[in-house]
Image 1 (cartoon, helix red, strand yellow):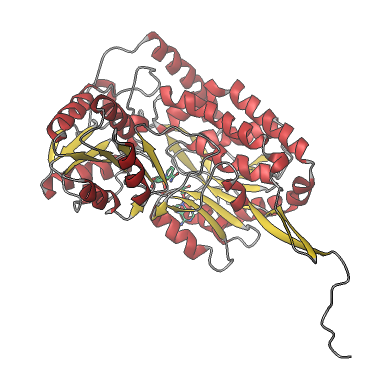
Image 2: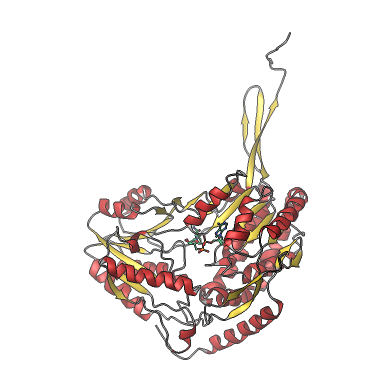
Length: 513
Ligand code: NAD
């Protein structure tokens, strides 16, 4: 970690972010319903704070069932015209959204860092990825309705896809802008209208996205943003009868709650939930690259990353060297102001989350694991005001420990040894989650054999997480329901309809003659 004086770029970013903050403090954040910024019906607000200093950024409208109802009505009324808009025109509008995101990428990245504590080096890329999400799905607007032809002698059956209707999108706080675009872009491309409920700990860039969508010419009511808490606004969205489906990204326990809440109105759900993803490092791995990949996939995005490899399963022959090398890296990671481009780990989202992460540091030690490095709150100088935790590595851990089973969602790596492939597989699969895995080996046959027995939705072999948007993204077991990406997104946002056309006067059974 470093407490060196800030770089000139950091000073410049801080000045720009503070100017944006001052503007937000004056304006506040309101809902965006039917093309207009509006206050909550109740008049209630809450404050969003920066994890850098825990000072308020601005007041935010606190929505409840009344605001969700207004937004759902707007989405329902806007639906027929949006559904029937020529796909070419939807494509043009979504590309326009992407253009505007690119134009405002710096502002988005600065505000995201300020609101979430995520380092600017990653948020600059996340803003651009938001634009890429819109471009990718813009280019699919014209094929979204495509189907199959399933002919028989007597019938031509063909399928077409129809947008399901107004949908709800509920997003978390870890990379809120990128994740919001990941849900909203395919929904719009499919012809759905949207009510978005962003996370209460990071509402700023969701409000900016609503502004951009409006500026791009997305018609009023097509996307509506209602801010507020999960138990009130979120819950009301999942229970609203006009909302046909819920696309949710967040904790597994919240996913269960949403299933219960949506049962009465038979909601279709798409869930991207938690993970306890393994990096499996075999004895023949390229150790340098395995260390690079594993360190990146636990400490990037502050460890607040669903696909982080929070467990490293390491062949016993490499175990001491691996532990030593990742610990050395963790010790050297630059923790600090997220607006500084040299910062690698920023402050965690909220003091409550710091308390959760620190509690796991204690739990791990009580369980008998060795805390090799980090895990303490950092309070030197300016860090004292923020939510800074030193990147931590636990060694001598076992898979039954809570630090190996539960999602900590912070910069904490648990390293566990194994002796052979069967044991590695049992450890990898021995958690309730099943989102992603990273496998490090030079043995091609083993890579194929092992990956196909992993109970996870996504595997990277000899690589960190590199996304290719047409590929399916999602988890097995407690990590999710459904897949996003490419055509998979349309499976969720659209209904498949079969139309059977008789090709001639085939016999029809005659009753009542
Ligand atoms: P969370 O479940 O606490 O909150 C997510 C969203 O759900 C928020 O907008 C919240 O207000 C809302 N919510 C809470 N209770 C609700 C309820 N009863 N009804 C409706 N909405 C409700 O999650 P979080 O702490 O914001 O995010 C971290 C979690 O997200 C981690 O578990 C992480 O793994 C997961 N995540 C998963 C992916 C993925 O792709 N699988 C991506 C990012 C984050």
